[in-house]
Length: 254
Image (cartoon, rainbow, N blue to C red; front, side, top):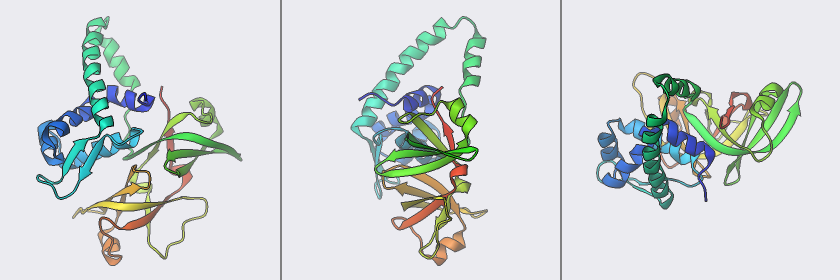
């Protein structure tokens, strides 16, 4: 099984996140791996969630309650990706030698865009339907989970979207709304079932809520601490989330 093009490009663009896999393999703990990588525990979690979302199979398997903040180890797919990363390091050295001038590398850096969107979900286009001036793009995320994106017809053409092509859906955490049992989803919105993985309280603002979808991909949302406390929402509990299709941005490999 070959790696998806989106994950392969991510490896090339964000090597420090893939290098975290090496530390996890050596340390067996997210906390110790984050320390070895010189990043925060939260940044390590973000990196693992993003990598697992982009891969066709989870790269890191986690367990709670272990020494050092919970155990973690690479899956067989994670070990395979780590070997690929090590080969890419060798190729990178060759690339640096082959660059004709330093500005070549600066140009490549400008062409590789990073995004501030916390949520990045890999999927395939499973439906295209015209709605007025827009196109409704249905994305299959795997495991019977699917979402809709609403984009302009010009965007559909510019991205060259066709059935079956690989895409990444980008969604800011602030656009994801948590629903309680009495809330009715807004008509036309995406509504997904999830499990609360972790609640990170912030004394200066809304709490960050990490969610796991039925297919193993993760979402990040924000919610007021009082709202969560009133509903007794804690890690391990089921919940529904919603977001409008127009909030979903799409990206494809360049």
